[in-house]
Image (cartoon, rainbow over all chains, first blue to last red; front, side, top):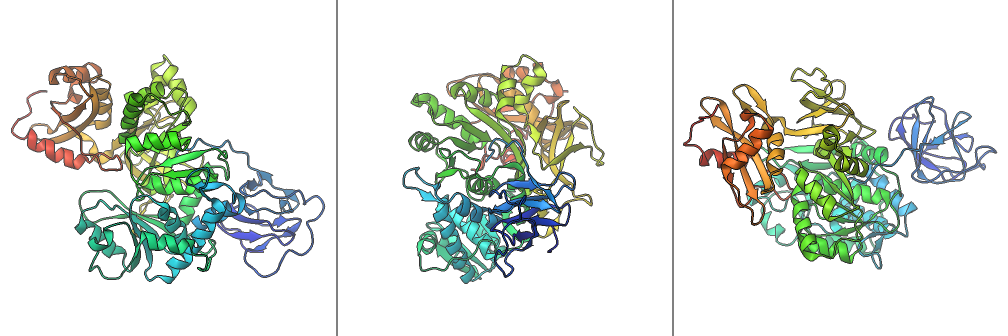
Length: 101
Length: 507
């Protein structure tokens, strides 16, 4: 499991999901129930996402664990769900700001 | 997070949306992704450690920016209107470099060592050439330098603000929604490419998926015609642009039916111009954005609801918010401090300090952040009781008269409230008795007439007499640069010469 520093890129080993770390928090980031691997590392998705961790990720959404403060941005969508240990991450629902540029 | 990520995400998730040009027949984000990846290969293979662009707006700007990001080379857009010697001095600083040049620029750079000159057309052709390999946009490190922007100061050695990939990317991610723009939205971009607003615009339109319509450079008639013909919904303007746009809209009489939102920033906007915009463009969403180059653009904004609320309010404190820059963005901490760095309370004036991931506060390898990561903006300001930020201009522009600090911005906003005044600028010029004295230069509205004494009385009635300009010059125009920034130093020299023989008489 690679270090979760800001800007770190990770890929799922159960689906096509990729994320980048926006804010650090907990360490045990998983997708589809399995620990994530460093993006670009060799290997393709193996086992399917585990039951309960298979509702999918959406491109461009921010996922967060409120307790630890961990926040990741989904940069590639996939079939697995993101979790910190067994706790599912939730989509961060910030009210978008009006465009200033 | 870095800039390469932004175009890769748009190319992946918004592939079929038109990103540039007319809604029918423009270039999609998918195709822009291919072109940016080819630009990356092209720029990797050319010699030089920086990617410089000396040109007006064109599709080459965003492709060079994204291509440079994926190539791992800093992007350095420069002002093509700079005098030859200044342009050559800056280019020498960033050599060896590949330089994308517009018409006629190459000859002006002849003889500078270490430059690999490429005409805009040649660069664009390479990005459309399907035989050019596509380089992945995810190439570089978040700590790498994304952009160098040379400041517009008029004296001294040119100084570059350094923006890293993580600064720019965190601005986007913390304040905007990926793909959040409606499919029918289009932004007109007319700010010059070397301005932070242009960089922010490339990033935010790509990240939110908003179509861009480019103007090579700003011209009010073409701007209005383009908005009408291209069904433009969003625009960003600097203060000098808005008044000229409203003039054309009023004369034209056809309105700007498609336009939903106008954001303005880059300098103080006269409040009467804001009120006029709300009248001439009824129902328009106005957004006032405040930010600096060193903060990756916007750090505080006044949104449409705040504008309408203030415009409709009889409460002077609420009404005054039309002249504020709203509240800080979610990713930004902001405080007002005194000259010793101690925090000040609501209503107290001091220096604006900010902290956040998007704040670079860095110049050519030298960080100006303090040990806790705070950046002193050198802008004067205060927060009101509800946390609305008011900016009073650069601290360096503050006039010190007889030991008292006077804000030029405050006097200017009172001057432009007079119906005869179109634009006003206030500066301090040397004075033997008082250290500095207050003088002004104003441009009158077309056809308007007013006496100097009447304007002075207008200011004196609203502010104290110390803040009343001793002399007011009536000018045809003020020295603004093309990004809408008032060149105060130029004006100060001009007025110092004009009023040099007069001593201060009024107390």
